[in-house]
Length: 451
Image (cartoon, one colour):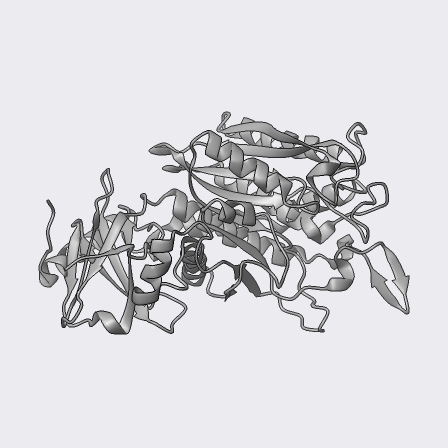
């Protein structure tokens, strides 16, 4: 069993690792390369292409080569196929589909296939661990049941879909330890059917899901409230999984953790990575599953107990969402190209790409994290070791009112550690595994206690 190291020896080891292997995240030049490689021109091309299909309503034309959801998803697959060809078939590209009927929901006018387009970049060390980036293929106008009228959906959600394709273009030039999934999901506007189909497919095939970054509207900078902001974006995440047990709920009452579920840890990870590598951006963590009373394609993953967040613009323009193209009282309505800022979409695509890369290069998170230190002057933590060759573990802690992990200590390759002089009552704690290049797993909040 690996045991606690002295603080001085731990610091010495950490210093050596930083200088010899680039353990500190800031020293991994590949992350900066990824940011530079994301192209606004490429994203603009893809958004225009998707908008030019006229409508991508889930129940629109599937036969035409120029209009409708069928043409759109075939083009997306061809783009993934081309990217795979450029990287020596590094992507496994395929359709995943489910059949729906009017009995399945109020927004289904007729029977149809809900077809997702999936591209999987397999990991070299942990091929069955998946980090997912999604965009929605479908669009809608004022009446979601109108599948024939024009609904270009330039921002909602050609922007998220184009960002997902661009992330695949950039990241396919690298090898990762974990697998990355780039996916276009259908049926979002009719009831999140694409996400439901994908997560059920993943569960059936025993995927170990690290989390999903759902991108839904990443191109608008001009809010209906008049605010113009090309730096801020929102990360929506639920506090705890809906699948938690009664025992877990009881533990939260006595030990805390009301805002420390797996999706919230994913949001904190994105916040931290963005501030580290893209300090010009302003990530906002929103403590809510999604916008008030609304939903997105990360929710089906949350419903089954997997981590998932929604990444999107900070200031929405409701005149451009779910609207027929028209002008009334001098106000232009409709989700058209003119409402998309391609440089902003580039920034949010880069946010996604660097977080996908960081998680795909990171070791698995530690399991069975337990905490002790009741009525003591110190806090003790222990966990199950991660299999494989890693640098070690980092303990995080924060004030109970802080939204972010503000303090940390690298403790070496051990499976338990005591934070001397840190009183358990005053902070929340977590543990992350650290890879040789400094990339970290998600932070794991303790799920048990010990003395």
